[in-house]
Amino acid sequence: MLIETIETYTTDIVGFVRITTKTGDFGWGQVSTYNADITSLILHRQVAPHALGEDMSDVMALITRITELEHKFPGSYLRRALAGLDTAIWDLQGRLTELPVCSLIGGTPGPVRAYASSMKRDIKPEQEVSRMLDLANKNGFDAFKIRIGSECGHDLDEWPGRTEKMIGAMNRAFGGQAALLADANSCYSPARAINIGKMLEDGQFCHFEEPCPYWEFEQTRRVREALDIDVTGGEQECELPRWRHMINELAVDIVQPDVCYTGGLARTLEISRMAAEKGLPCTPHSANLSMVTLFTMHLLRAIPNAGKYLELSIEGEDYYPWQKNLFTENPYQVDDGHVTVTNVPGWGVDINPEWLNQATYCISSV
Image (tube, rainbow, N blue to C red):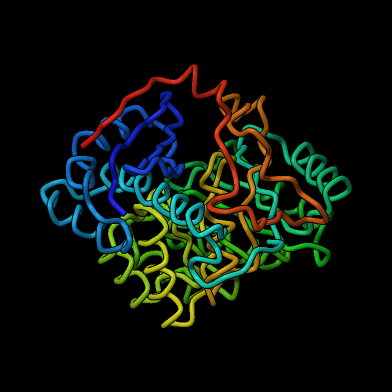
Protein backbone atom coordinates (compact mmCIF):
# COMPACT_ATOMS: atom_id res chain seq x y z
CA MET A 1 0.00 0.00 0.00
CA LEU A 2 1.62 3.22 -1.23
CA ILE A 3 1.10 6.82 -0.09
CA GLU A 4 -0.45 8.89 -2.87
CA THR A 5 -1.14 12.23 -1.13
CA ILE A 6 -0.34 13.98 2.15
CA GLU A 7 -2.68 16.82 3.11
CA THR A 8 -2.49 19.20 6.06
CA TYR A 9 -5.17 21.37 7.66
CA THR A 10 -3.46 23.80 9.95
CA THR A 11 -3.75 26.71 12.33
CA ASP A 12 -0.83 28.14 14.26
CA ILE A 13 -1.66 25.73 17.10
CA VAL A 14 -3.18 22.56 15.57
CA GLY A 15 -2.26 20.66 12.42
CA PHE A 16 -4.19 17.61 11.23
CA VAL A 17 -2.74 15.34 8.56
CA ARG A 18 -4.58 13.11 6.09
CA ILE A 19 -2.79 10.55 3.97
CA THR A 20 -4.54 8.86 1.06
CA THR A 21 -3.70 5.91 -1.17
CA LYS A 22 -4.38 5.48 -4.87
CA THR A 23 -7.46 3.43 -3.99
CA GLY A 24 -8.87 6.31 -1.93
CA ASP A 25 -8.25 4.76 1.48
CA PHE A 26 -7.21 7.38 4.04
CA GLY A 27 -6.11 7.98 7.61
CA TRP A 28 -6.00 10.96 9.97
CA GLY A 29 -3.06 11.97 12.10
CA GLN A 30 -1.67 15.08 13.73
CA VAL A 31 1.58 16.98 13.94
CA SER A 32 2.45 18.26 17.39
CA THR A 33 0.51 21.23 18.71
CA TYR A 34 1.91 24.79 18.87
CA ASN A 35 3.62 26.34 15.85
CA ALA A 36 1.82 23.66 13.89
CA ASP A 37 1.93 25.88 10.80
CA ILE A 38 5.73 25.72 10.87
CA THR A 39 5.68 21.99 11.55
CA SER A 40 3.29 21.36 8.66
CA LEU A 41 5.61 23.25 6.31
CA ILE A 42 8.43 20.95 7.41
CA LEU A 43 6.16 17.96 6.80
CA HIS A 44 5.62 19.02 3.18
CA ARG A 45 9.24 20.11 2.57
CA GLN A 46 11.26 17.46 4.40
CA VAL A 47 8.99 14.48 5.06
CA ALA A 48 6.56 14.22 2.15
CA PRO A 49 9.24 13.95 -0.58
CA HIS A 50 10.58 10.80 1.12
CA ALA A 51 7.17 9.31 1.94
CA LEU A 52 5.11 9.78 -1.22
CA GLY A 53 4.96 6.63 -3.31
CA GLU A 54 6.52 4.60 -0.49
CA ASP A 55 5.19 1.47 1.16
CA MET A 56 3.82 2.08 4.64
CA SER A 57 3.38 -1.47 5.90
CA ASP A 58 6.36 -1.06 8.29
CA VAL A 59 5.88 2.32 9.93
CA MET A 60 9.08 2.28 11.97
CA ALA A 61 11.18 1.41 8.93
CA LEU A 62 9.70 4.29 6.92
CA ILE A 63 10.07 6.82 9.75
CA THR A 64 13.62 5.70 10.45
CA ARG A 65 14.58 6.00 6.79
CA ILE A 66 13.25 9.54 6.63
CA THR A 67 15.25 10.54 9.72
CA GLU A 68 18.35 9.09 8.05
CA LEU A 69 17.72 10.93 4.79
CA GLU A 70 17.20 14.15 6.78
CA HIS A 71 20.16 13.49 9.10
CA LYS A 72 21.33 17.10 8.86
CA PHE A 73 18.11 18.17 10.61
CA PRO A 74 17.92 16.38 13.95
CA GLY A 75 15.71 17.73 16.67
CA SER A 76 12.21 18.67 17.59
CA TYR A 77 10.57 20.14 14.49
CA LEU A 78 11.36 17.23 12.18
CA ARG A 79 10.12 14.76 14.81
CA ARG A 80 6.94 16.78 15.34
CA ALA A 81 6.34 16.63 11.59
CA LEU A 82 7.05 12.90 11.41
CA ALA A 83 4.39 12.37 14.06
CA GLY A 84 1.78 13.59 11.57
CA LEU A 85 2.79 10.99 9.01
CA ASP A 86 3.18 8.17 11.54
CA THR A 87 -0.16 8.70 13.26
CA ALA A 88 -2.03 9.03 9.96
CA ILE A 89 -0.56 5.71 8.78
CA TRP A 90 -1.72 3.94 11.93
CA ASP A 91 -5.23 5.32 11.45
CA LEU A 92 -5.29 4.19 7.83
CA GLN A 93 -4.10 0.70 8.77
CA GLY A 94 -6.79 0.50 11.43
CA ARG A 95 -9.50 1.57 9.02
CA LEU A 96 -8.32 -0.98 6.43
CA THR A 97 -8.28 -3.86 8.93
CA GLU A 98 -11.36 -2.61 10.81
CA LEU A 99 -9.39 -2.62 14.05
CA PRO A 100 -8.61 0.11 16.59
CA VAL A 101 -4.95 1.10 16.70
CA CYS A 102 -4.52 -0.42 20.16
CA SER A 103 -5.37 -3.82 18.67
CA LEU A 104 -2.82 -3.34 15.88
CA ILE A 105 -0.07 -2.98 18.49
CA GLY A 106 -1.12 -5.89 20.69
CA GLY A 107 -3.72 -4.39 23.01
CA THR A 108 -7.48 -4.32 23.41
CA PRO A 109 -10.10 -1.56 23.63
CA GLY A 110 -11.36 -0.64 27.07
CA PRO A 111 -11.17 1.89 29.90
CA VAL A 112 -8.09 3.87 30.89
CA ARG A 113 -7.80 5.47 34.31
CA ALA A 114 -7.11 9.19 33.99
CA TYR A 115 -5.62 11.81 36.23
CA ALA A 116 -7.01 15.33 36.16
CA SER A 117 -4.09 17.43 34.97
CA SER A 118 -4.01 21.13 35.78
CA MET A 119 -2.05 23.39 33.45
CA LYS A 120 -2.40 26.45 35.66
CA ARG A 121 0.10 28.29 37.77
CA ASP A 122 -1.94 31.49 37.94
CA ILE A 123 -4.39 29.88 40.35
CA LYS A 124 -4.52 30.11 44.13
CA PRO A 125 -4.32 26.87 46.14
CA GLU A 126 -7.87 27.12 47.45
CA GLN A 127 -9.21 27.64 43.93
CA GLU A 128 -7.26 24.67 42.59
CA VAL A 129 -8.48 22.42 45.38
CA SER A 130 -12.06 23.56 44.81
CA ARG A 131 -12.07 22.63 41.15
CA MET A 132 -10.35 19.31 41.84
CA LEU A 133 -13.02 18.44 44.41
CA ASP A 134 -15.67 19.36 41.87
CA LEU A 135 -14.07 17.04 39.29
CA ALA A 136 -13.93 14.22 41.83
CA ASN A 137 -17.62 14.63 42.56
CA LYS A 138 -18.79 15.07 38.96
CA ASN A 139 -16.47 12.72 37.07
CA GLY A 140 -15.07 10.35 39.66
CA PHE A 141 -11.43 11.36 39.32
CA ASP A 142 -9.20 9.85 42.00
CA ALA A 143 -5.88 11.21 40.74
CA PHE A 144 -4.82 14.84 40.31
CA LYS A 145 -1.76 16.74 39.10
CA ILE A 146 -0.87 20.30 40.08
CA ARG A 147 1.87 22.70 38.98
CA ILE A 148 4.52 23.77 41.45
CA GLY A 149 7.45 26.19 41.20
CA SER A 150 7.69 28.25 38.04
CA GLU A 151 8.53 27.06 34.54
CA CYS A 152 12.34 26.82 34.15
CA GLY A 153 12.27 28.97 37.26
CA HIS A 154 15.80 28.75 38.70
CA ASP A 155 14.38 27.86 42.15
CA LEU A 156 11.80 30.67 42.10
CA ASP A 157 8.13 30.04 42.83
CA GLU A 158 5.30 31.47 40.74
CA TRP A 159 4.83 33.73 43.74
CA PRO A 160 6.45 33.41 47.18
CA GLY A 161 5.06 30.54 49.24
CA ARG A 162 2.65 29.23 46.60
CA THR A 163 4.17 25.74 46.31
CA GLU A 164 4.18 25.05 50.04
CA LYS A 165 0.58 26.25 50.35
CA MET A 166 -0.48 24.19 47.33
CA ILE A 167 1.06 21.00 48.71
CA GLY A 168 -0.63 21.53 52.07
CA ALA A 169 -4.02 22.35 50.57
CA MET A 170 -4.02 19.27 48.31
CA ASN A 171 -2.92 17.05 51.19
CA ARG A 172 -5.71 18.30 53.45
CA ALA A 173 -8.28 17.75 50.72
CA PHE A 174 -7.10 14.43 49.28
CA GLY A 175 -4.20 13.02 51.28
CA GLY A 176 -4.49 9.24 51.42
CA GLN A 177 -7.72 9.30 49.39
CA ALA A 178 -6.36 10.02 45.90
CA ALA A 179 -3.14 9.87 43.91
CA LEU A 180 -1.43 13.27 44.03
CA LEU A 181 1.05 14.34 41.35
CA ALA A 182 3.14 17.51 40.99
CA ASP A 183 4.90 18.97 37.95
CA ALA A 184 7.80 21.39 38.44
CA ASN A 185 8.54 21.98 34.72
CA SER A 186 12.33 22.14 35.17
CA CYS A 187 12.18 24.65 38.03
CA TYR A 188 14.71 23.50 40.60
CA SER A 189 18.36 22.95 41.33
CA PRO A 190 19.00 19.46 42.79
CA ALA A 191 19.25 20.74 46.36
CA ARG A 192 16.00 22.68 46.16
CA ALA A 193 14.28 19.83 44.31
CA ILE A 194 15.21 17.42 47.08
CA ASN A 195 13.83 19.85 49.65
CA ILE A 196 10.57 20.22 47.72
CA GLY A 197 10.44 16.47 47.15
CA LYS A 198 10.52 15.81 50.87
CA MET A 199 7.61 18.25 51.28
CA LEU A 200 5.74 16.32 48.62
CA GLU A 201 6.42 13.04 50.40
CA ASP A 202 5.14 14.50 53.67
CA GLY A 203 2.08 15.73 51.76
CA GLN A 204 1.38 12.17 50.51
CA PHE A 205 2.21 12.91 46.87
CA CYS A 206 3.38 10.00 44.71
CA HIS A 207 4.79 11.67 41.55
CA PHE A 208 7.35 14.47 41.16
CA GLU A 209 7.70 15.47 37.51
CA GLU A 210 10.64 17.21 35.84
CA PRO A 211 12.14 18.57 39.09
CA CYS A 212 15.35 19.84 37.46
CA PRO A 213 16.13 21.27 34.02
CA TYR A 214 14.98 18.40 31.82
CA TRP A 215 18.20 18.34 29.79
CA GLU A 216 20.31 17.72 32.92
CA PHE A 217 19.88 13.96 33.40
CA GLU A 218 22.50 13.73 36.12
CA GLN A 219 20.77 16.39 38.22
CA THR A 220 17.46 14.55 37.94
CA ARG A 221 19.11 11.26 38.89
CA ARG A 222 20.56 12.86 42.04
CA VAL A 223 17.04 13.90 43.04
CA ARG A 224 15.64 10.45 42.27
CA GLU A 225 18.32 8.77 44.37
CA ALA A 226 17.59 11.06 47.35
CA LEU A 227 13.81 10.60 47.44
CA ASP A 228 11.22 7.86 47.87
CA ILE A 229 8.61 9.63 45.71
CA ASP A 230 8.62 8.64 42.02
CA VAL A 231 10.70 11.14 40.04
CA THR A 232 9.51 11.32 36.44
CA GLY A 233 10.37 13.03 33.18
CA GLY A 234 11.16 12.87 29.49
CA GLU A 235 8.29 14.71 27.85
CA GLN A 236 10.62 17.05 25.94
CA GLU A 237 12.94 14.38 24.54
CA CYS A 238 12.71 13.46 20.88
CA GLU A 239 15.96 11.63 20.07
CA LEU A 240 16.17 7.89 20.74
CA PRO A 241 19.85 7.94 21.83
CA ARG A 242 19.04 10.48 24.54
CA TRP A 243 16.14 8.31 25.65
CA ARG A 244 18.47 5.33 25.78
CA HIS A 245 20.91 7.32 27.92
CA MET A 246 18.18 8.55 30.27
CA ILE A 247 16.80 5.05 30.74
CA ASN A 248 20.14 3.26 31.06
CA GLU A 249 21.31 5.80 33.63
CA LEU A 250 18.04 5.43 35.55
CA ALA A 251 17.63 9.19 35.65
CA VAL A 252 13.90 8.76 36.36
CA ASP A 253 11.56 6.24 37.95
CA ILE A 254 8.87 6.69 35.26
CA VAL A 255 9.33 7.70 31.61
CA GLN A 256 6.96 10.25 30.04
CA PRO A 257 7.35 10.40 26.26
CA ASP A 258 4.94 12.50 24.22
CA VAL A 259 3.77 10.65 21.09
CA CYS A 260 3.84 13.83 19.00
CA TYR A 261 7.17 15.14 20.32
CA THR A 262 8.98 11.84 19.80
CA GLY A 263 7.97 11.45 16.15
CA GLY A 264 4.90 9.26 16.42
CA LEU A 265 3.59 6.02 17.84
CA ALA A 266 6.24 3.69 16.40
CA ARG A 267 9.10 5.61 18.02
CA THR A 268 7.16 5.90 21.29
CA LEU A 269 6.68 2.13 21.29
CA GLU A 270 10.45 1.78 21.00
CA ILE A 271 10.94 4.10 23.99
CA SER A 272 8.41 2.10 25.98
CA ARG A 273 10.23 -1.11 25.07
CA MET A 274 13.57 0.32 26.25
CA ALA A 275 11.95 1.38 29.52
CA ALA A 276 10.30 -2.01 30.03
CA GLU A 277 13.68 -3.72 29.74
CA LYS A 278 14.85 -1.63 32.71
CA GLY A 279 11.64 -2.21 34.66
CA LEU A 280 10.41 1.38 34.26
CA PRO A 281 6.73 2.25 33.78
CA CYS A 282 5.61 4.53 30.93
CA THR A 283 3.12 7.30 31.77
CA PRO A 284 3.17 9.52 28.66
CA HIS A 285 2.78 13.26 28.43
CA SER A 286 -0.51 14.31 26.80
CA ALA A 287 -1.27 17.81 27.98
CA ASN A 288 -4.14 18.90 25.74
CA LEU A 289 -7.30 17.54 24.16
CA SER A 290 -6.17 17.37 20.55
CA MET A 291 -5.41 13.91 19.11
CA VAL A 292 -2.30 13.40 21.25
CA THR A 293 -4.34 12.23 24.22
CA LEU A 294 -6.20 9.79 21.99
CA PHE A 295 -2.89 8.40 20.70
CA THR A 296 -1.80 7.96 24.31
CA MET A 297 -4.99 6.15 25.29
CA HIS A 298 -4.40 3.52 22.61
CA LEU A 299 -0.75 3.20 23.64
CA LEU A 300 -1.64 2.61 27.28
CA ARG A 301 -4.09 -0.14 26.32
CA ALA A 302 -1.28 -2.05 24.61
CA ILE A 303 2.14 -1.70 26.27
CA PRO A 304 3.10 -4.11 29.09
CA ASN A 305 4.66 -1.37 31.23
CA ALA A 306 1.76 1.09 31.05
CA GLY A 307 1.72 3.51 33.96
CA LYS A 308 -1.15 3.81 36.37
CA TYR A 309 -3.02 6.51 34.50
CA LEU A 310 -3.46 8.77 31.49
CA GLU A 311 -2.73 12.48 31.66
CA LEU A 312 -6.03 14.23 30.86
CA SER A 313 -6.04 18.01 30.70
CA ILE A 314 -8.88 19.61 32.63
CA GLU A 315 -8.52 22.96 30.89
CA GLY A 316 -11.53 23.84 28.78
CA GLU A 317 -12.30 26.44 26.16
CA ASP A 318 -11.65 29.32 28.56
CA TYR A 319 -7.98 28.28 28.76
CA TYR A 320 -7.55 26.50 25.41
CA PRO A 321 -10.18 28.02 23.08
CA TRP A 322 -8.54 26.26 20.13
CA GLN A 323 -9.74 22.88 21.48
CA LYS A 324 -13.32 23.72 20.52
CA ASN A 325 -15.03 21.61 17.83
CA LEU A 326 -11.98 19.65 16.71
CA PHE A 327 -13.86 16.36 16.34
CA THR A 328 -17.28 15.21 15.19
CA GLU A 329 -17.69 13.50 18.60
CA ASN A 330 -15.86 14.02 21.89
CA PRO A 331 -13.53 11.05 22.53
CA TYR A 332 -12.71 12.20 26.08
CA GLN A 333 -15.88 11.57 28.03
CA VAL A 334 -14.94 10.79 31.65
CA ASP A 335 -16.91 8.18 33.57
CA ASP A 336 -15.84 7.17 37.08
CA GLY A 337 -12.42 8.67 36.48
CA HIS A 338 -11.85 6.71 33.27
CA VAL A 339 -11.88 7.41 29.54
CA THR A 340 -12.51 4.64 27.02
CA VAL A 341 -10.73 3.37 23.94
CA THR A 342 -13.54 2.13 21.70
CA ASN A 343 -13.49 -0.63 19.09
CA VAL A 344 -14.03 1.90 16.28
CA PRO A 345 -11.32 1.32 13.63
CA GLY A 346 -8.17 3.45 13.64
CA TRP A 347 -8.06 6.18 16.24
CA GLY A 348 -11.85 6.09 16.45
CA VAL A 349 -12.53 9.73 15.55
CA ASP A 350 -13.13 11.97 12.56
CA ILE A 351 -12.12 15.61 12.27
CA ASN A 352 -14.95 18.14 12.28
CA PRO A 353 -15.55 19.29 8.66
CA GLU A 354 -16.42 22.80 9.86
CA TRP A 355 -13.02 23.06 11.56
CA LEU A 356 -11.29 21.78 8.43
CA ASN A 357 -13.04 24.37 6.27
CA GLN A 358 -11.53 27.18 8.36
CA ALA A 359 -7.97 25.79 8.43
CA THR A 360 -5.10 26.50 6.04
CA TYR A 361 -4.86 23.71 3.48
CA CYS A 362 -1.83 22.26 1.71
CA ILE A 363 -1.28 19.06 -0.30
CA SER A 364 1.74 17.08 -1.47
CA SER A 365 1.16 14.35 -4.04
CA VAL A 366 3.03 11.84 -6.14
